[in-house]
Image (cartoon, rainbow, N blue to C red; front, side, top):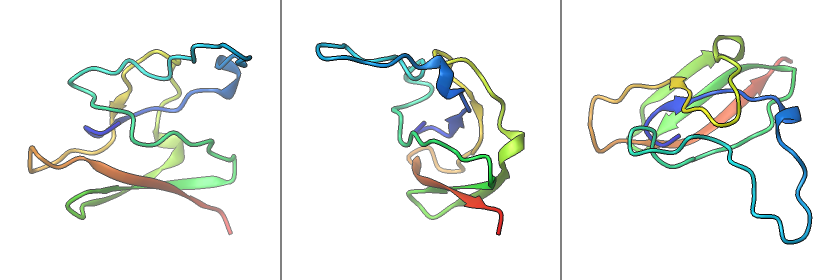
Length: 97
């Protein structure tokens, strides 16, 4: 999420939608967490996650170090910012070669 929080959730926790569906809650979005910046299916071959902030701060984490939590939770702190106005810009995974 925008303020550096994140989590992993199993795909099986998300029900399918049909026509007229109102969506599925992905995270508990609050002022503390910020908006959801990225949502991505992480393949099992992904070993590391790289998170980049708008000011150029880069954090590299092992994919196994991010906890698997339920759908409607806030998550855990993955990235801390030295500047209050900074936020997450992008994230990607690095797969095993």
